[in-house]
Image 1 (tube, rainbow, N blue to C red):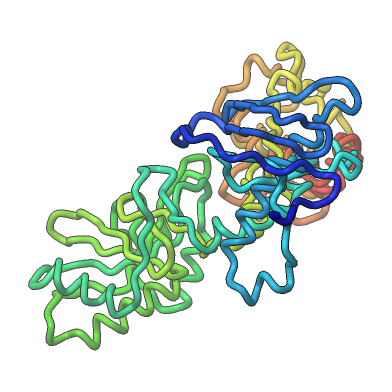
Image 2: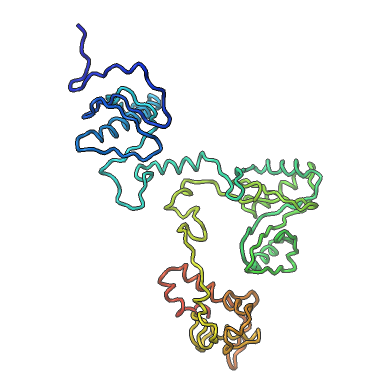
Amino acid sequence: MKKDTTKKGKTAAKAAPENIPLMDEDHIEVLGARVHNLKNIDVRIPRDKLVVITGLSGSGKSSLAFDTIHAEGQRRYIETFNAYARQFLGGIERPDVDLITGLSPVIAIEQKTISRNPRSTVGTITEIYDLLRLLYARVADAFSHVTGEPMVRYTEKQIVDLVIGDYDGKDVLILAPIIRGRKGHYRELFEQFIRQGFLRARVDGKVVELATRPRLDRYKVHDIELVIDRLKVKEGDRKRLTETCATAMKYGKGNLMVVDAKTEQGRYLSRNLMCPTSGIAYEEPEPNLFSFNSPYGACPRCSGLGQVTEVALDRIIPDRSKSVKRGAIVPLGTYKGSWVFKQVEAVLHLHGHDLNTPIDEIDEAVLMILLNGMDDPLKVSSGVGLSDRYVQFEGIIPFVLGQTEEGPKTAQKWAASFTQMVA
């Protein structure tokens, strides 16, 4: 007489079908499921689709989803661990089913623990999002968003070897990239370079003498590289080249640029992640770079919000038939004997206009100076019996944008506080 080893309350598993189908990568197949209320059912579920299991209460929906499919997927995942790790996790009993094919690692979200936070996702609720951030930071390969090429990094020794190997016998400039694609006049930056003992810089592809105090258009985009050294590359000068590259990477924050003096073709090299063609560099990826709750790695212009604030010129000057004195520039209002109006009056007087000139009659270039400021110091009359003063007129639009960035309460008061801030 054979002993019945079947557990009490459960039906003995029937023999698996002889013709077991091959694994279908497009479907999950469940054959002979008998967990709880399930009565030996077969199910074929399409993958990569949102599938809803519906039915009456007690029909076996949760038994199929959680106690059969999820339980088997979790059991297979735990079996991949070594014996030492499995002893802490405990064993998971195989669900009462003949066969499950096409199953991947599974995640289950309990029905009663779903967060009510509207920003919650499957990734945050299951905490797999934290593991994905770690995976992308430590394992993923970085690609340039400009060219699509893989990012590369070199050691300082590899950089010196590459320069000697590719430019042997050639005259080159070793540059430290400082500014890339940003607006500004950068007078203070050039003065700082002079105080540090540097003589030349490469501005928008042209080498200039810093002693001439280069004047740049503050409203145009510029690229600035500091000239560290000009030398002829040869193996015998490895020590000098090594020191030059180290200095260039110090000022270039880990990046340098080698330019062939004859062809003026440049190449970027970096000890950080860098695009070999465009020269853009990434910092070493960290998990918080991929977190939407961290400002690290967010867009510097919109702070990760996806929205930017721009000044509408028709709101600043809605009626061009008015003069400045009559309130044509809304942030200033009508004329007052304040310091800001003295500056505006000085700008207009400098270009042959006055406060009574309608905006329509003011040259467009002069209007742009009023709105965006000017590079040169502005001579402003301080009043009867007082000496004139030289000030830096920043313009109206930069102030409005600055107030908007500080917060909504400040932005509401920008018109009233403009006079105080400029003064």
